[in-house]
Length: 152
Image 1 (tube, rainbow, N blue to C red):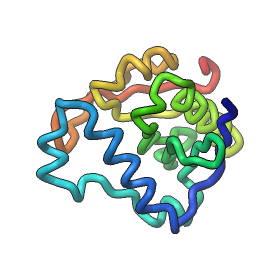
Image 2 (image 1 turned 90 degrees about the vertical axis):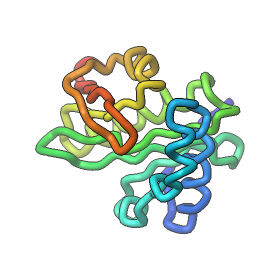
Image 3 (image 1 turned 180 degrees about the horizontal axis):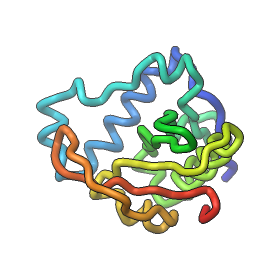
Image 4 (image 1 turned 135 degrees about the horizontal axis):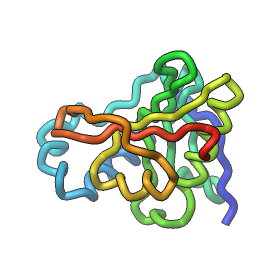
């Protein structure tokens, strides 16, 4: 299985939001909130236009995407990482993280941070992210996790 990663296109916004919705609704913890607030699933067109979204494909099928935004000098924010639920645990998320690190490294970045969904904390820990703070999200508390490029 070859995972190809490329920049997302503005025309794919709806398809990527649908993928995000499918992946997000798997976790029971947020399902009711997400169903009550469907507007919470939103991929800004500006992120696509500014080439901040990377799309993972297998055999031409979109299977995941990430959105990485500059935060402060050297620090980037993993604003989103979503993989089709039927493709979980097949290396797609890992490939998207590796790609994000490559992308930010080319831009002089030193670290990648994420406000980790509690259901995804174990994945980020496996990827060597470390807890560096707490955040309050629309649907509850979460941890801020950081991966520095030298430990990637």
